[in-house]
Image (cartoon, rainbow over all chains, first blue to last red; front, side, top):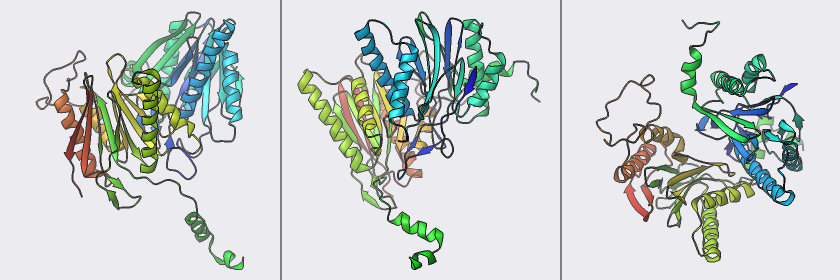
Length: 236
Length: 250
């Protein structure tokens, strides 16, 4: 099963609060998928405010706890704050129940918060990726209250580009190294085609040992890496 | 009613806009900050402007010293950031009384984020830079948006001239975008000679202050809302220094 849902983007990639001039971060590519025994989360690092690049080094993969990652697309503050909140609640859960929160549990908790704020212009499109007693798990949630379990998701303005690369080469029996390379390649191609996506590429592997930050690479290096790949459209 | 119908549609919209409640004014101004080896520099101009071309004041501070190791600089709406600075100072003071120690930089950063996000549905029109020395003695700078998203960064610039200053700092302080294949090699004569492990020049504190000043001079040259004076704070382990420099008053 595969699905891609971009967060609602009123206007272009910027979001304006009624009556103010405040633009919030938008424009992203995040992707996540799960294979046998592990899951991958990857994202770019560009943050835009309107047409300006506010930062090229944003961490869009937020640790909820040692075994769960949430990716952020939409308003940076909404994603950051509520991921933080779910993180602290998952810690409390662990202390109370002497076991880790499941990915399904964390994503439902997060989703329930978003439902409470439905219609109040929160802007969140997030993948909750993690590893729990039932294995690697992956959910997509957004500010409409939608919560879907799946194997492949991508999110944000560059998600369509990332998915087209990802879908072509994805197999459930990918090894970790292959999966990391595929994630990096997918995000790279999104940075190439979508101006809202760029900066560095971050990839995280989540398996039974926890989260492992495997790649943090500047896009510029990747350009030279992938430009040498045999291409159906050779450069002039 | 009849009168109303005679008014062209567009004009009616204009009429409606006039009566709309506008809670925000952008008093503008530029704040910038960056970290060095053992210091953090935060600077801002001291002009407070109207939404239009008027200058309301030339001697307005945008920077608050929260503790001996933390400094907060904010651009945006003056009423909002004055209140914000007051609230941060109050919280820092209460922390001092309750815990008999100063609030840490990362703690203060999280506190500021929470205050901003608590006003998510009626945002505080303030764009913040929070800099200082953290718990392990490292200089750190945090930059924020108006509703509390924040992150560590080596350089940061917010406010009306922020978009002008930030690429300048990227280039001068971080020496970004200077890979030989992108930019032809430039002469390094004017640069400090000592270099760090990554080959990038280490900027001494004295020169850092000049860079901060020059960045604001550059901003005031191209942004009408920036000018008058540059207020430069340097935070080191020893404490906070404050320097005042002149900018053009036009």
